[in-house]
Image (cartoon, rainbow, N blue to C red; front, side, top):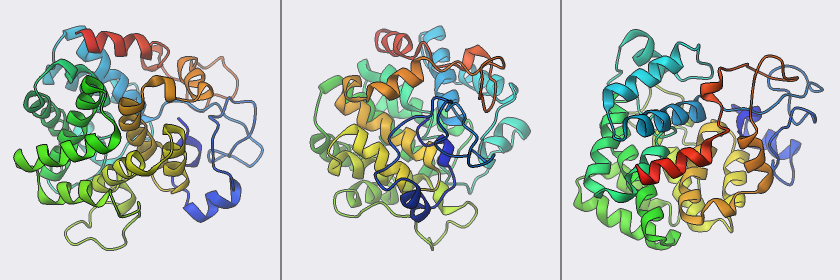
Length: 310
């Protein structure tokens, strides 16, 4: 939600607008940014496709008590027909047309997967990885997407289960990935997070069908970079937003990983309050996009507890 109002903006412009970083989620009363309207129009920050798909995954997992790919796909299709907004072309092709793009390496599978990591706390990493790949294949079938989703989901489950710090998690997941046959490019993204700052590449061999700001390895690399180098969860998520680009998605991915390591007590109270009180209905002032209440995140904490115990 923090990155929603500034999605698509470039880092240099964001730094002019927010020299100290964008740190507050819009409450609809103060005009943080225009959201495509005008410079004085306030708007309530709300879940975009990232959060809403994650909520639907969480609901499917808790209702079924297991990972059921058919039930999850039904949940995603229900979201799509709501009608969805803010979605990417790969998800659109899959959910609207049933077309699975074999070339897309976009981040849409990674952005929604954190509930499966929570659900996977009490399961073997190989099983969690298999479920993660099944989920990815519902919309994003490229092997790099599947492997990125697998290592990310396994990382979340590992962090919650063991309480390890970011450095220990990073070392462990690289070893696990190497032993598990994860694609070299995914392992490289994990390794480079130790010493290479986040960036938006301008030329990637073999990746030309998506805007590079949507590349799944950009988001994966950034999440682990922030985990290893940011002073806090808040600092990591804010820095991610200030990099610009696909800000709602990269911030959601970074926040999910850092939240698994730091715990919910590390989340700024203003952010938690904004999420747990987000009710974007048509009668509420300054709502950008009214949404059915099944997509509201007001029961997110209860869902998380149910995922752990499922």
